[in-house]
Image 1 (tube, rainbow, N blue to C red):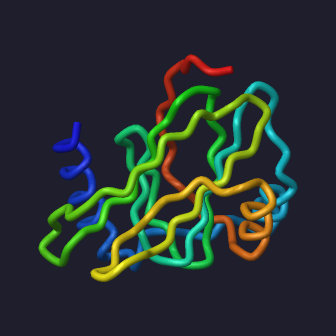
Image 2 (image 1 turned 180 degrees about the vertical axis):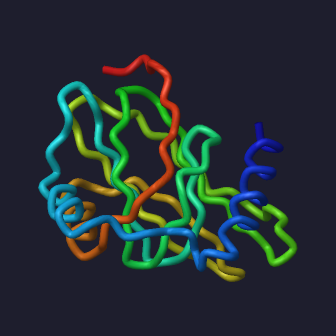
Length: 156
């Protein structure tokens, strides 16, 4: 699975080089709607926001290249997911992968922060509280992400 993620990241980086970051802002109305924090019945919202540039994947599927002051909103079926943020070197080598496991509950919002820590700098993913997450998302802009395939999960 790690090899699939590495190959996918390399292709994503290669393709993204000609398009700046390859990430587009959502429309103003989509941004406003996402910040209402309404969940689709039977689904879970997962908000991932960032103050840095980074690539994000969920269950080994690249969802996109996140930019500073941006966030992704994912509507997921309830269940267990692994969100990853690999650190890529200039030689396109994966150095480390920050991972967080999330048990997405139905009709619930979940918030994840992508930031940097330490020296040398590395990326970290962290599940944050509802209040912290909502405050941060309100300061960020909704970005478009790649569609991912979700399978039926064993959720609550």
